[in-house]
Amino acid sequence: MEDALTPDERQQISLMLNPAEEVLWQGRSLAASRREVASPVGLVQRLRSWFGAKAPRPLVEAELSHLYVLTNKRVIDTLGGKLVQEWPLMLGMVQKVELREDASGDIVFDYAPGAAAGMLLPCGILQVADVAGVQAKLAAAIDAAYLASPWT
Image (tube, rainbow, N blue to C red; front, side, top):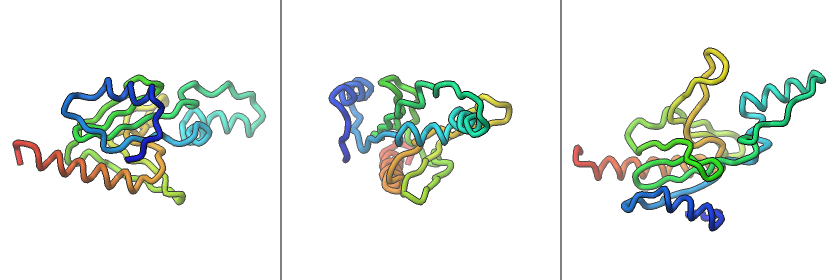
């Protein structure tokens, strides 16, 4: 398991974990500059700058990276030390996996309404390096959780 977390981040994660939870993987979303391009806000700002309009400073969220934690029970998404969302491990939770040429990508669990009408934003483990490795760990954790359930 990679461990590039600061002591504060490790402490924050340990406070979020239940007694029976074990961390299987943790990782951050990629650099803020890449997040700005991929986010709708970042795209609008890029377009405005191309046409000469003064773009406002990017949102603070774009400067932070999400910290994702995969445990034997759930996936946790935090931003700036605060819980953003969590998903219990279950069969069928992965809706889509997007792999980029540089081996980074997204594992999409769900879609949420965006700021514009009809816009859907992906939710899940987004913009992480080695998405195939994360997908394999997630699949193994889902299988283990399924086999450990009393309903199997």
